[in-house]
Amino acid sequence: MDILADLLSSRCFLCKGKGKFICPKCLSKFEPSIQKCIVCENFSENGVTHPLCKIANPNSPDVYLSLFEYNFIAAKVLKMSKYPPYYFYLLRFLILNYYPKLDSFSFFACPIPISANKMYEREFNQSEIITNALFDATGILEISILNRNRDSIPLYLLDKIQRKRELKNIFKINSLKFFADFFGYKNVLVVDDLKTTGETIFQAVSTLKKHGFNNISAFSLFTT
Image (cartoon, rainbow, N blue to C red; front, side, top):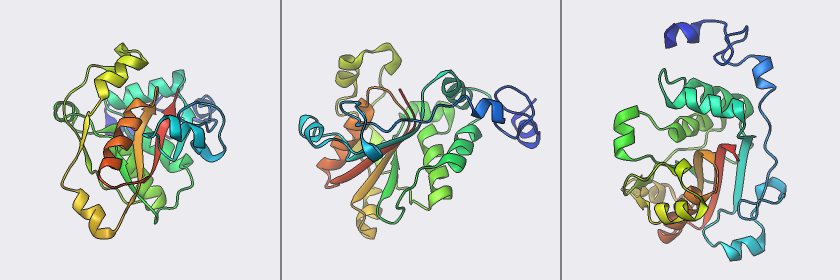
């Protein structure tokens, strides 16, 4: 069955049971995230980074929000959206139905970029798919002002210290910063599909701060 047939069917993408896109049974297997401080990973109301944690890690975002814990059903969604047949509509479905409450007029959204090589291979970026869905759900403007300087080793092969070393200075600002400056945007929402150690987000925040963006929050669809 091809993607178009799946989209037009009344079958769940995950179990092939009855249900449009994701059936109620599969939806019940997603675990809503408990909002935590991204640095210490202890509970924090509304995902606010604790003041002492901000001092300990100056590259942490002011707020970090996520929708779901990364479990077996979340892993299946990411795998099905990342590899053929590329069911990335699953990501859109989850965002459009469970999107967080955001003040769409106070900041713009910046998806975490993938490398040029990966973009050539896939022809899409999962973080951009999520950011586009956030725009449809909340009206938050997307300005993709970050690029990757280079490819990185697959991060699942690395521990936390190795990831920090591998991702150091991985991002750079591109010419789209002109639009952020033109519209007077200084508040940024960094968007990713999955947060594990948080190092990707920390590196993005570091790059943005070096270019004058001081009020930075982050969002991911899934978190470990």
